Length: 84
Image (cartoon, rainbow, N blue to C red; front, top):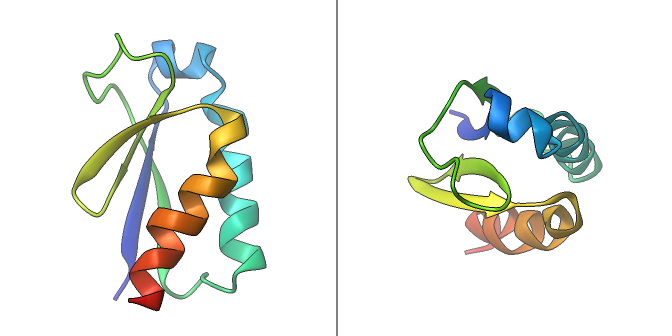
C-alpha cells in the first residue's frame, strides 16, 4: 500500500516552482527510504490557485507550500504518518 503525495502541476503552480517542489519531494522520499511507501504523482489544477504556494495534497489534506517549506512539511506530515 502506498500513501499518495500529489503535487499540482497546473499553469499557476508551475509558475510557483512546482517542478522544483517535485524534485525536493523525490529527494526526501529517497533520503528517508520511503520509495515503497509513498508515491509521488502530479495533478493538473486542484483549484487552489489563489494561494501563494504550490498546492500539495497528502493524507486527504491540501497544503500551499513553497520550496523553503518542503523539508519541514515532509518531516512533520509525511514522516509523522510513519512514526505515529
